[in-house]
Length: 57
Image 1 (cartoon, rainbow, N blue to C red):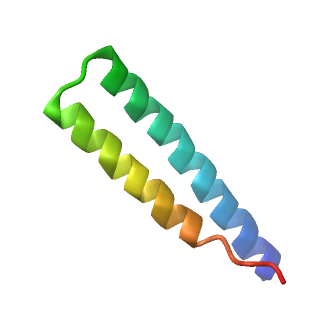
Image 2 (cartoon, rainbow, N blue to C red; image 1 turned 90 degrees about the vertical axis):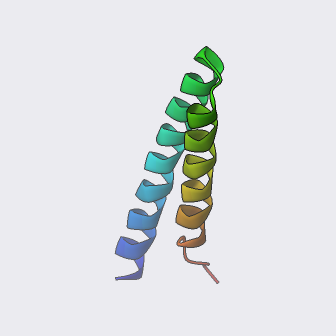
Image 3 (cartoon, rainbow, N blue to C red; image 1 turned 30 degrees about the vertical axis):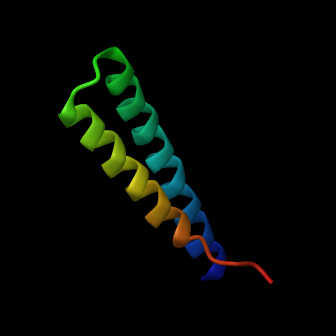
């Protein structure tokens, strides 16, 4: 169960990183208030996803 949770959390972080890259590309292509907000939203999503990765002791 712990391995499944870890893998799931890592996959979510990977997906969030891909979304953040897409948002950054959109912002660089044409900075607008909405692309800036989208970039901040995806950054926050990445932070939340990273918090779900369990600590291994």
